[in-house]
Length: 161
Image (tube, rainbow, N blue to C red):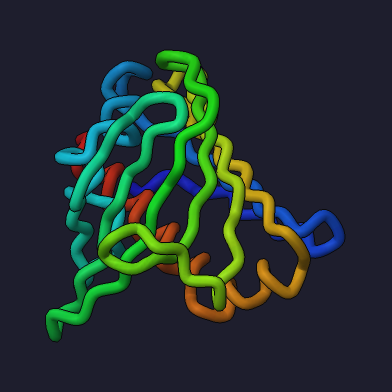
């Protein structure tokens, strides 16, 4: 059975809080969030695929990837990594961009903070996403972000089984 995902939207603080527990060791779950070849397996909601163009998982490093649709259409995005605490947490700034990493100014950037905590059931993953304003947050939600992200998190759960 898919474990529940908590997905709280707070428009007053322009933020989203997501929590999910995986039945796996912290180090294994960590790898699926930080290694491009593993991220490619689950980050995009099916039938879309995630394809990494480049990744440097280090403070100040960048993960440049595309979401590839069933018709071959591509949407590029990148995460610029901030502070990394091995097997505990990392943060990054997420933006839409072109294939060369040039940021698309039509879409606001979002600040993501990922947390990993060992619990009795396995690993609790928390994701805090902060938007510059509630309009930016609304725009992403209207693009289907909630459904897509939940789908990806559940895909990861299936992989970890």
